[in-house]
Length: 408
Image (tube, rainbow, N blue to C red; front, top):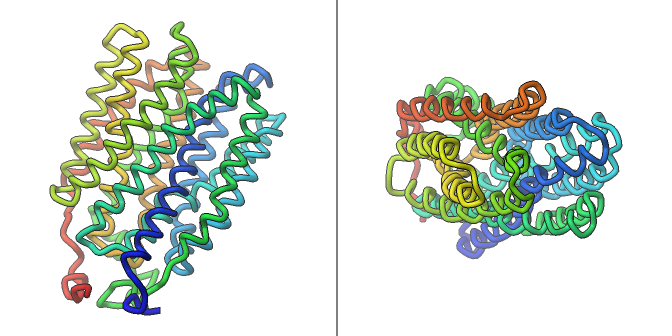
């Protein structure tokens, strides 16, 4: 169908609203998993490494499946991908509640939920929204979707903690599975109307798009920088509740910290996404990575208290996922939107390799040393490296896009 045959603004609004709700549920549910580490490992007699490994596998599977989910969304539309991924996500949550061995927990929390996340989060939804929105408004639209994911964390983390307290970890996981199943009907609101050439003046095949991206230095620099983002945020999201408990603070401090990260991430993601439409995206990315390292240094140097945890969570939350609309915006800016979901999926895979290492090393090194100190130091060093990696990125669109006709 030709875009001129339907109300493009109403169409774009539908994708933004439904996509935002899906991302909010997908990311919000995923951010509750750190709350289950203490009660599940205590109840089932598992080590923290066993729990962390399953969440690490989840992140790796999420990243590995993201390019494939993105390719399916680019080819067949985001709605079908969201439908299938929502089913897998809800099933994975149900089976998490019935996991009695670490191996089965890897299958449920790691493989099934990881595959579900690949089709209900950024790559798939950003690809659909990026294609539907005019380039002049694309940064704002992506920022809205990113902020919605943060709202899901802010909303669902306290809900998850409350459910654990009242229903136990088993009942809480079943309740979260019901919430996850809400993504399935929302898939119909993510159905795309596909223009014939996807907004490109020059037709391009999947193989040509991959060759173009993989031969572009900036694509690899963005990919390596996004590795650091994954390492930092998933280590903190999975291990911060246990870290504050180890230091003698009440359990609700860790829960409130995750909720504050989600709250301030709403403003940070939206704000950085808006700035990305006006300023250099690569420079904003460098600022975020350097600021994260500075915030971690300040947190470790200050006396630990409920207040210091809150300040750390607010500051880190503001910097949490501002990288996502900026990174995806750069991919769209440089390579166009026809294969945005697939190319963003490849970049995101690097993010998830970092996530795997961050959450797994956190559990492994804690079990071996009784401390998270080494991983905190790694987070600080990687932030500086990521800032340096992003600065040389060439932000100019590929030459073939210079002949693209203006949208009516």
